[in-house]
Image (tube, rainbow, N blue to C red; front, top):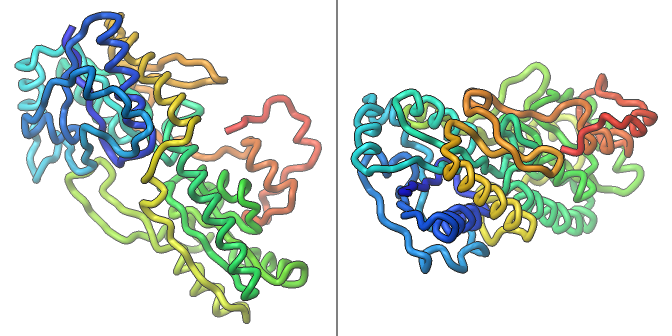
Length: 369
């Protein structure tokens, strides 16, 4: 067997563990030759590949980033204004690959699905700190990112308490609020604003006034894709034409600060975590889940079960067609257990209509998220 591995989109913790899981199991069980495709789909476009040895993938699971590189601006269907998908498919055939294990987010999974129509065999491995890929309960990288954000909240609390400030923490997450929600609950935030439920400014102001009376400071966690009810998503860069995701979000933290400064008489500071959420060593949980999905992807390739993405459901590994994942994003649903817990504890979500009775906590259909 000759199997390619690529990592596409933004980097995240756990990618090297997934590479090691897939490569080592293919080498050990099937004596396969593993071809690293450098910098994701850009390596296919620019014909940059190399053979991986066992030495290359040993003892890398604790390292952040990806040892084979990645790129989130290399769509074969629109590379520097041209459709080079046909040339990419031809290079795939020249390499003599049985298939490619592609590790990426929803943009990469969409590219895999579209390129599979040209005769390329893909098995997808879901990775993203955003945890927003459809058809799977969890992606590796998410736990590590939440840990970073939760620690940031812990640190912001001590300075907020000392100065009696309102502290705003802006997290990543794109159009889904998983990082902000989980980090906010883990860190004991007073206000959590996420894209799925546009916020009303007066609700946030009310929460700040309540916290001022009780503890003299307020911690607000806002996802980069959050927006006010009557406003737009904050965007820092438009029209990145050669990327599967042509828009870069960011700036909602500072925008919210400006909104609040016109309404409350408290000192407000904003911290944008940015790419620190992606960096560093993966958590033990992310190392395990990444290793598991990597090995499972290798088994799918060995069985020639292509056109699938590995999924995690109820702590079990399975797979779904790439078609079910392509052009799709998984947001936070109203029955998510962490969301329900936040509401039950009185955390402000910015939406007065978002009220779940406490008895809902006894419902056995709630989703852990």
